[in-house]
Length: 216
Image 1 (tube, rainbow, N blue to C red):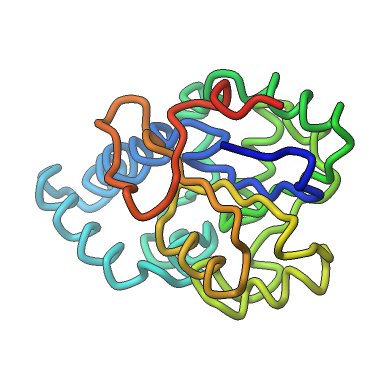
Image 2: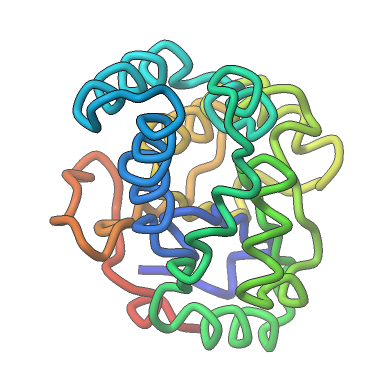
């Protein structure tokens, strides 16, 4: 699937790609609604319905990924709530071996994430993955989410890469489409970002079930 001799840079998403998306799904769909319901004296289903509508309005924007935004909007200390369930943060199978193998092939590795800096710090602290990357780029620092075409131009300015010699692995189809529009040709989707949910329909892109499939 991958011609490693032709690859110079590997761009990797975090949530759903390197890390199991179950943590994030549980946090936003279960834990936050529960705490919101407790704070406002609501039934859990009523809280979940209200939050789902709010999430929908923010989808595809940096606000959706912004810990500070949701702390202000919901009146909840989102960083503290994230730590309440941080035992659920988990690295997908074979990721550490994959990163080591890519490093051994002397490829440049960049973590490129929409996650807010506070969430990113928590996950890197919990997983100890930080030392595997040559660069870590947070979309909030560039002012645009990865779903936006302009993000990839800004990324190129801070992490120069040759589009035709770069591999991007991401679980988000809108992100992969934006990268493709920018000119990145080597794109891989992730079939099961959340280990507790069925595989996604990713027929539009080549995809992997785990990193063992593309181990250098």
